[in-house]
Length: 244
Ligand SMILES: C[S@@+](CC[C@H](N)C(=O)[O-])C[C@H]1O[C@@H](n2cnc3c(N)ncnc32)[C@H](O)[C@@H]1O
Image (tube, rainbow, N blue to C red; front, side, top):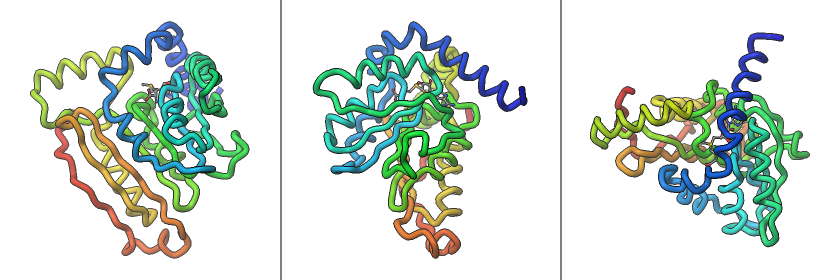
C-alpha cells in the first residue's frame, strides 16, 4: 500500500470511528456552533436544474436545507465517512425531501463522473476543510469540478480574530478533541487560486472572526481569462488574521 493510500485509509477510519455514534446527535449539537451555514445556503441562488454538490456533506443537514430553499436544484453529496452518509441517506429519502445522490469519496480526489456529471454549478464545503488533512488539495479538487460560471461556497471556523484570547484558547482546545484545525491561511490560499485562475473571490468574517465565509466564482468564459492575470478580481474585506 502506498504511503498516500495508507494515510487516506487511516483518515477514513478516523472519521468513521468518530462519527459512528456522534452522527445520531450531530445535527442537534452542532446547531449551536457551526455558524454561517444558513447564510451560505441562502446565498446559493440555485434555480431550476442547477447542480449543487456538497463536499463533506456529513448527515445531509445542509443538503436537506438546500432542497427546501431551492426545490428544483439537483442535489449531490460526498463524504469520506460511510457512517455519515448512512444518516444523510436516511434523512434525504424522507417523504417531502428533495432527493440527493450520495457517494463515499475523498474530497481531495473525486471525479464528477462518479455522479454521472461533468461538473457542478455550485459546490459547498461547510466546516469540512478544518477536518481534511490535505485541505488545499480539497480546494483544488473542488475548483477543478466547477462548471464554467459556477461557484464554490465555503464556510468554516475563522481565527476568532476579534474575540477574547481566552475564548480562542478554549475553543481551540475543544476543537482539537474533534480533529478540527481552523485553517489560518484559508483566505490567502483562496486568493492565490483566484488570481491564478482569473476568478473572483468574496470573503468575509462573521461573529468577530468566529467563522469565515468565502465564495469563489469561476468565470463563465475561461479560455482568455485563465491565462491573463490582469483580469483577476479579488475583493471583499480582508479579515485580520491572528496566528494560531
Ligand atoms: C464537521 S463535519 C461537516 C458536515 C456538514 N458539511 C455540515 O456543515 O454540517 C465534516 C465532514 O467532513 C467529512 N470529511 C472529513 N474528511 C473528508 C475527506 N477527506 N473527504 C470527504 N469528506 C471528509 C467528515 O466525514 C464529516 O462528515
